[in-house]
Picture 1 (cartoon, chains in turn orange, cyan):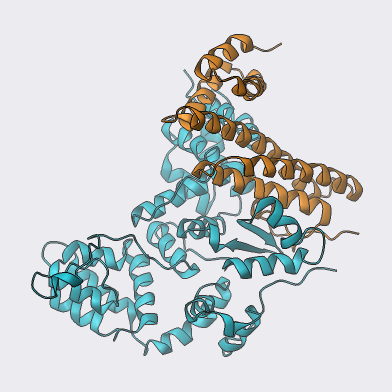
Picture 2 (cartoon, rainbow over the protein chains, first blue to last red; picture 1 turned 30 degrees about the horizontal axis):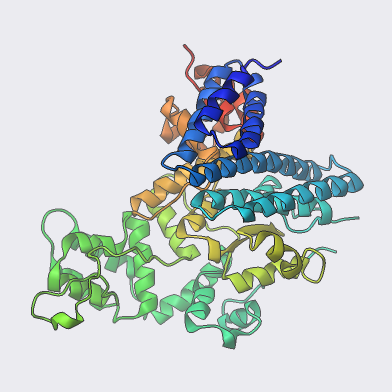
Length: 171
Length: 356
């Protein structure tokens, strides 16, 4: 059971974003915030930073611009979650902890997720905020491709490989 | 079979060959791009190999001495304008020598040569000094020297136009952190969009993940990727701050990433990128809005910035960062690092609050 009162939080956010089309994003966001905060000893402090972050992304906008900023923020968090998984898979492969077939299948599933996010990204109007989502998504898809093909990878995964001569080859 | 590295290995005496090998059709490139590839786009080893040729082109000028003479002339109260003219006159309007001097000045004194001159000169004197650097933009001519009709409304301080190359990135970092570490460029390839796409297609071309079949319709483009130990950067989506950032990654202490993890490393690299770029008023936007605020939070809670820098470049991350968090914050380093690796930025910031 969540420590955060998700119903009350959702209601609070819906008063800030009253448009019906915001409901799905807000529901997802509240559940995601709760997942992050509940695992910590101080959920209230985590929630404070989460709210500050949302306010920073939507500040100074109104109407459709505010809704688009909310969508971009939710997409950024989903891409962050994807990136954590692609990076972890890449590290596992580099460490020799993931079998080839498994790596390929998981990489394929993650690549499909990345492609779907890319489609959502294209539907949003261009803002500077989206550039960082695009960068994070680019890293994620390069890591997914690495899991499938064992060729190029993201720069951050390459740094993780350290002094290794290069990525292992597909056998 | 391992893919071949995209960058050719060259002998220093054959710069023309390097140019031809790196670009499929060198004749189709602009002189500026050819010059860029020749001077800046190679890895550090290649750049160093090419330096002697550059020095010869520059008629064996002692650029460090010229930089010192300019600095001495503008440093402190008063300016010795004639000394600056004499020093810059030795460049003889040679663009290669001017670019090299700019980097040398930046790396040595932590500010651009142009900024140093703009701070001390004005009017005709500024125009003359900038003219010796081959730059006239922003130098407001004195009244009556040119027809009013030809005077445009150029800003007094126009946007900075530092070269986007490895040598400049190295100079920016040496200027900012040269007292802490000797900066090296590492293996970075800065490529214009067509060359970047070609580099990608040397790996994935011809298959379902080729640039045209996969990347363009779904992602439009990519910012960068790594292969066989080389970091490829797409200049179409990069700024000088990107080069500074990527180069910083190549200068970390051996124990750094192992202790702090990938995400703290990214956040610290962005914090240091901003610090280096701020010294020369170069824009450095926040590219990692999750990671760098966490590191900023730690600094705000009392993590000494000098310790962070020392751990990043020279080692000791366990005692300087991890142990500091263990001793001072509400959650221990293992928890904070775990949040970071899961991209849970708010949890990490909350964990870094000071113990009551």
